[in-house]
Length: 237
Image 1 (cartoon, rainbow, N blue to C red):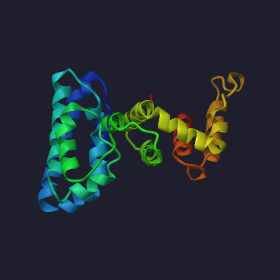
Image 2 (image 1 turned 180 degrees about the vertical axis):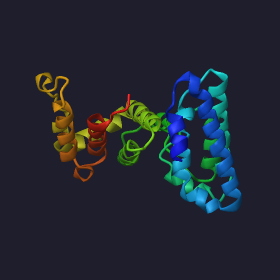
Image 3 (image 1 turned 30 degrees about the vertical axis):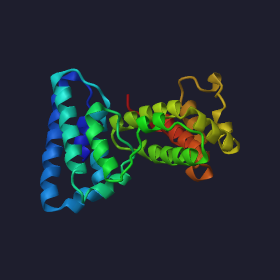
């Protein structure tokens, strides 16, 4: 999986072929494993699906990019079509909103598995306590994905979080108000004179993030904790 994630991190057009080869290799490996040991695929299903996020999130117009996306969607369709693997999809954090994944989502829904998607949020936008609780659970799950080893996966997750909060703004506002005692003090703007281009900014962010532990609040608090840590430690361009 590490080799696949490294290939997915490459975004330059010259390396689109490498991404395609990575997806095809993963597809063949998983296909063979499904024949001989489907439970091993199940126990690693979340990692397999998440590794495909970069090619499923982007809308490529070049032939190689489209081929990689089509191959990834076909692999997911094969996975959801296996009844033994369906229960494991409940551990997948979300699926990108890509047209090629509509059949995958339909199969999951038919099998009683509901995965986080923006289209569901748009359809049932609500500030009910149930929806707020669901949003909180989704945020906590997504925040954990910000620690993924792949830069490309982390970017997809952050974009998904931003889109989710845009769609669920009323419910998020209610969560923010409910957690303001634990969270609002971390929204203070850091004085630019103390940041500059030195390491002070990273030290300040790291200190804030460590003070804001995941257990000190709910979804909003955990979200801020994860974002602050990423700002403090992310070295990738």
